[in-house]
Amino acid sequence: MTDTATTLAEPDLALGIPISEIADGAMLVGQVKGEPVVLARRGHELFAFDAFCTHYGAPLADGLLVDDTVRCPWHHACFSLRTGEALRAPALNPVSCWRVEQRDGNAYVGEKVERSPPQLSSAGSAMPPSVVIVGGGAAGNAAAEMLRREGYSGGITMLSGDQSVPCDRPNLSKGYLAGVAPAESNPLRSPEFYREHRIDLRLNARVAAIDTAKHEVHLVDGTRESYNALLLATGAEPVRLDVPGSDLPHVHYLRTLADAHALVTKVPISQRAVVIGASFIGLEVTASLRARNIAVHVVAPDAVPMERILGREVGTFVRGLHERHGVTFHLGTTVTSIDEHGVTLKTGEHLEADFVVIGIGVRPNLSLAEEAGLAIDRGITVDEYLETSVPGIFAAGDIARWPDRLTGDRIRVEHWVVAERQGQTAARNILGRRDRFDAVPFFWTEQYDFSLAYVGHAERWDEAEINGQLDGEKHDCAITYSRGGKKLAVALVHRDFEGLLAEVEFERAMRGQLAR
Ligand SMILES: Cc1cc2nc3c(=O)[nH]c(=O)nc-3n(C[C@H](O)[C@H](O)[C@H](O)COP(=O)(O)OP(=O)(O)OC[C@H]3O[C@@H](n4cnc5c(N)ncnc54)[C@H](O)[C@@H]3O)c2cc1C
Ligand code: FES
Image (tube, rainbow, N blue to C red):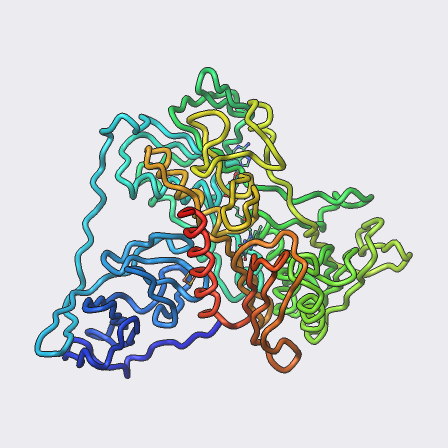
């Protein structure tokens, strides 16, 4: 991702700037009292806001203005130009807005606008007195926060099977494992945040069953929790490899913060690792371990890594990228056993390893919903408002299969941003808002200096057209995935702005379908 960090050599916007210097739809970076600020123009209106995204700090001036919002170039968070509110995840915090005065053809940026806290309300027949959220991950956390942001004053209980507060899972295989992001970057919020917002977050609180007739969830420890509205956000779990030795202590999976801690602890005392699986998690882990100077062998049954999702050309490039960083691939084969010194392949070859990481996919946690009699179709079936077949029970994140207007299919994806946005939409609908879930799916991956953003959803495609260059010398391209001539998704390599344009194009296509 391009990081055009703003410097304070930028113009002082408090001193004024000719409005004619800002084209309609353009953004200009400046500073006010030493703070970097963006001045944006939409028609006759001017808006000023913080220069950096509250998610990972992308320069918002490299983003896109859409109506009265600004979209972040890196992971497509969306902020209101009028209030600074983070309208769409992955940013959870607002940006500050600054007062702008237009005088004598100039724009002057004044002080920061004070934000008023949400007006808490328990009024309205649609408001349930209490909401229980099962799951303390991306979707569960975003939902709990959104309930409060929407002014909900009733009880919120979040029951999480995790040992720690909701964490930034994408960071676990990338910055944190690579040693460039500190442990403090993992929690999404502090324990105080949940207390201050009266979100009763219970950790190690595993739900064993849902009694839909009595509106209760039964926890593994024998306690019960009543709900008026229920959100299921139980996410997914790594698929376990069933070979002799796969339960040895040096065999790791990566889903939770505890898993990441266990891996990070291994790094200083290890020199060699075997990674089983050549999809996103496996290859991100590989890149992070190489950053820590661990020798890595990757074993996978695929002929080309990530071919099914991204196509042969991108997959071949990714393989070459890792090989240039010293990784050895063993493709078209599988592991038949693991011992304390390494792994044995189907070919009989033995690979030495101090530890093994398995990343062979995930399986959505559906058993609670299944046993409670909710409609299931390779995921929990939800409608466009993310409500399940049982009224008052919603589902979001990796478990939810929803009607996607873009493809016309019911789809389920395993993406961070989608899970958070679904949590936000489900929260609004729990409060009776009737907010349709229509976000364009988005995910990203980072491996070494290579980053790819994927917009849309192409589970099956018959054409992948590459525009640009993707080889050892240059990574700069867009790959369009189509089926039957219909564009379904676009993967962008170091073309952030094009990714935003693709998102808007898909949104317009969806709106067009709604209008028909
Ligand atoms: C290491 C890693 C890196 C990733 N990187 C990316 C990335 O770069 N980009 C991207 O788009 N996606 C990425 N993903 C995927 C992304 O993290 C998931 O799609 C997202 O977390 C799904 O959110 P969720 O809320 O559905 O589930 P989760 O975040 O998995 O949360 C599920 C929660 O439910 C709880 N739970 C489960 N069962 C029960 C129960 N019975 N009782 C109580 N609680 C229960 C769990 O303990 C957990 O708290 C990554 C995932 C991992 C593991
Ligand atoms: S840095 Fe802005 S959305 Fe991630």
